[in-house]
Length: 481
Image (spheres, rainbow, N blue to C red):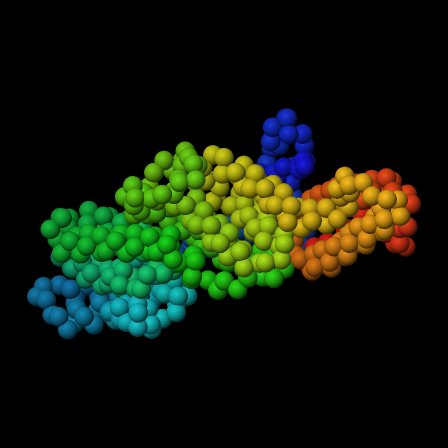
């Protein structure tokens, strides 16, 4: 049985197999998955113009905000001048952080770290929102300190250094709170995001204010980074061993369609890449213990080591769990259709996103071959038993008995055909290309055998609506869902 090939863009390539793969089509060359529409050049130019205006307005807003923060800082600096007044400093620090929308970092239980199994006070979305707000606040503070540093008198510089140290110490409490959260997929994202901000902003502040390695802020920052690394590595191990299997509801779709977890996890894997530098450095040491290339695929050239190999590894984990869960689909052929749908969805989402940059050579082709295998398995499970009803078996019988046996054989074929068709009309193959491939493959393997049987046995009476052409039309209704 010969099939076309699945194109590298997640489409289908039915070109000659002797000529190599067709070039991947650009996603822009195809209609949108949502409505099939495309933008005109005029629309794109207009959109680009609006984006430039938006960027200019945003930049002006940021500069205006920094100027306001600088004015606030000048008003608060007297509280950080010598001699130290703890209560005044605490009040000024609270006001300073609140001006950035980060006053909540002074509450050590703000993320619910270590409570109720780690994360009992705030939802996953709220933790993510706070981490983003914290990152924005830290970046703004670093800009304010850096831009104002050269325009202050010596006494003010000393006071600003005290404010910066107090601010940095307070902001670091979030790193500890994230590290203390219970292990979860969202915790890994938060740990990577916080690691990226701390590792970028704190060295700048240390150089600006001459904080040496023994300075309390430098020591606290190193400890925070170490805690985030340890937390992220534990989350990675949990991702590989349990999260993908148990974190998302695994109720199996009975029509064989794409499981909702595919969209969830492929989206999650893309989120991991937003902090790809952190991903590389934080998870690098763990790769020595990883079995991510156990399937024989080489690591991608852009990620010879480090945490970036995690992408291919986690996708493999998702595929393995899908294969395991598909065993619950008992109807012949449904398991293979389910795996075909889900493998195609995974490939499509990978090659149409930046995930493709971190996949090893041959990754797509390996999935194409796997999908072709699912089609063969589907045919063997669903349609080989149907076609076998027409097998003469090579036995010799008397003419009268032979005619009766042929009639019974044809009747058995019709029954098996109708049973298979009635079940598979309800199966879902969302992608029209894959649906067409399956229908064509079924027709090519069933109709010629049926037509040949009728030609070899003209004495058998064919019921109305049972010509070879009508059977072929019958098969075109498969997978309508």
